[in-house]
Structures are given as C-alpha cells and as structure tokens.
Image 1 (cartoon, rainbow, N blue to C red):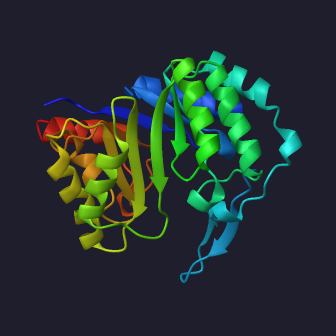
Image 2 (image 1 turned 60 degrees about the horizontal axis):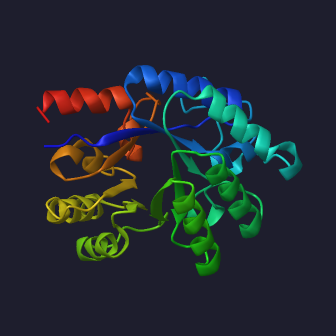
Image 3 (image 1 turned 90 degrees about the horizontal axis):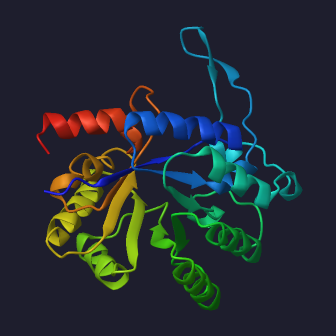
Length: 265
C-alpha cells in the first residue's frame, strides 16, 4: 500500500516561530508543512493563572478565538512570504484560512485572495484554495496556479458538523481530479460522526482519487491513524504533544509514524 504524505501544520504566530517549527517537522520526517499565513495576524497572549478545585494554580492559555489580532499593517506580506520561502526546508502548502472556516485572517475576501495570489507568484509548492472562494476569484487563482505550476488543494472546512459517508464520497468524486487534491475537515460530535469519515475513505480507497478526509474532536484522529489502508493521499499532523491530544482529533507526527509502524502499515 502507498504510504500517505504527512503534512505538519505550523502553529506559530511569527515568521521565526514558523521557521523553527518547520525545522523540527523536517527532523521528524514530515513531507510537507502547512504555512497557516492567517496565524501571523494573531498575537500570542500570556498564559493566565487559573485556580482549580484543589486550590492549585495553573497557567492556562485562553482559546485562540480570544487571542488579540495584529493590525493588517503589521504584516508586510511580500517580506513575510519571502522570509518563509528562504527559511523553510520542506515543500510548503500555503494557506490563508478565513474566519468562517475556522481561520484567523482579519481582512476582506479581496485582500485574502491577493495574499494567495502573491504566494502563487512566489512559486510555493502548493496552495490551499477553499471551494467557498467566489467563482471568478477562484477561477483566476486556479489559472494563476496552473500557469505557475503550483499544485492546488481544494478544501472545505466545516467547523460544526460532519456529513454522512455518502455525502463525503460525493464531495470527493466531484472535487478531486488530476490537478487538485480534495481536503475536507469537519467536526465530530460523537463516534458515529468519526465513522462517517472512515466509511467514506474505505469506499473511496480504490477509486484512484487524491483526497484527505479528517475531523477535529474525539475520534477525529481515526482516519489519520488508519490513513494508509484508507487510501488517503495526505495526513495532517501536529508537533503538539500535550496530554489527551487525541480528544482534539489531532495526532503528533512521531506518534503517527510509530502507530503506522506498529500496525505494519
């Protein structure tokens, strides 16, 4: 069976943090890193002291949705893209996720599309273009990517639900083709939701299509852990290693590779 490519999604909020993470991902055996350019507009706050029921004080980070934002003028897009290009040793999947798909980009759609266009012009390996991008803008970005020989991931990020297995299969068949990989990331609310992704991947595994299906939440890591037997083209992993990471649907890259070796994938 073909082993899926592994992409580590970078979680830094500065170019330097992302470059440092990319170096660690390279050492851990990643094939790609995902530059979440929208995260550069976040300001990482200080952890806040919180007292638990036993009177012990722990320092806890607030959820990222509550982190302060940088001003649009604080980020020089051209310089940031160039610095990332020079400092990252792995092929890059360039992403600028909008807020309505779980991202952090604070600007308008037009400004976001301009950033994506700049990344394509820079010769990035792959660009993530959400299917929610309006038709004319998406067509223009696709044409630019084709002319620049930049690969494309067509993505949907549903932060509320997970479709049925039948719906996921239909999505893959509609949007995965020779030029584009299809990526879906949903949210599982129970194990039945998690099974929908596994069932869809199993049905598609011999279809010869390029896809990555995953979810956040408890059970969302099942499709990542068993990706080699589910025909998945790529698995998104993390460098995080905190306790109960699996309840978030995430998996550490080293744990992922160890699991594949243990299960003889």
